[in-house]
Image 1 (tube, rainbow, N blue to C red):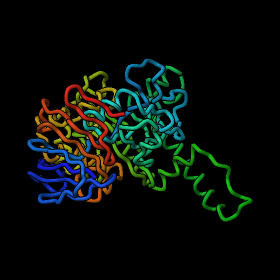
Image 2 (image 1 turned 180 degrees about the horizontal axis):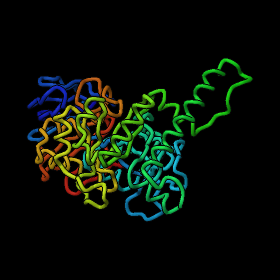
Image 3 (image 1 turned 90 degrees about the horizontal axis):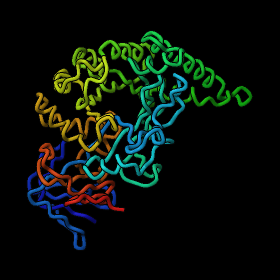
Amino acid sequence: MLAITNVRILTVTQGTIDGGTVLIDGNKIEAVGRGVAVPQGAKVIDGTDKVLTPGLIDAHSHAGLDEEGFGFEGWDYNEATDPATPWLRAIDGINPVEMGLRDAAANGITTVCVVPGSANVLGGEGIVIHTYGSIVDEMVVSRDAGLKVAFGENPKRVYQGQKKMPTTRMGTAAILRENLVRAMNYMTKMEKNQKDPDKQLERDLRMEALVRVLRREIPLRAHAHRADDIMTALRIADEFQVRVVIEHATEGHKIAQQLSTRGVPAVVGPTLSSRSKVELQELSFNTPAILTKAGVKVAFTLDHPVIPLKYLPVVAALAVKAGLPEAEAWKAMTINPAEILGLSQKIGSIEAGKEADLVLWSGDPLDIRSQAEVTIIAGQIVAECSKPCEILQ
């Protein structure tokens, strides 16, 4: 058993507790509050003058798929040979011990959603993992992250070079619709024939992934920067009555009400980057505040490795500087991505019964001078950072 005592606790969902204690039993939070009794024999960490928060969550990354410190040998995030590859699975390309994931754990980011890149219209299934481990299967938090789809410049650029569709935004939308219709037909035949063994269809992995979307088991995770591309994603989601999450949402502030009315969340970023292409001309730290004010559920993305995961608190601080309320910035790093990923009953806040993903900070985490001193994932201390930081083996 582990106890963190005398600490300022930012629970996110239940307010702030000064001088409190968090008791951890196994991989779960056993108790939270003032006056919590610490059992004899428990390991105690004194949190005096420190801050305890939930583990931070990045809702869109390529961590482990696009490995830091490598060239093409570590580029496993884009299968840029076919614009429709829904049967790909991010889990099959992740290196669980790559440098970016280890840095993330050492800096308080405990959970990431890893998705394929945006070269293809349909890129494949994402996965949610913890940032610490040596076997990716043992790091999995959820296999229901969603199916990556991409709009805008990237599919056009990749396939224009190969002289095949899509070379226009119309072509991108058409390929997505075509595959969804094929999946609808496959699902209809599958359901019609499932009671007759002689008529059962041969398995089609491409269609099975899309059937999960049509059944609303997983959302489309739609890479879309420009407002018109976001609207195309919403139009297709409405047409096929599927769930969608907007990834990047660079121009989301222009259509905030459209997102809010539909209840569609936005994973915003990487705003710390440069305007490296045309669809990023409206890049602004004002976007999270505008979307939040309109009632849109907002999370942050660093789009790792575009911006390393460890800078998530820096991005949150810059969003606060641009007008996002500090409480909302904390939600955007914790409970909001947990809700977007369907994991809010498990992670995203400090509450009894939830998984013990916690970070002990030397001071205010939104102050760049603060250090993540202890990172705990599923009740296990995985990183201790004095000087220098150490990832525990």
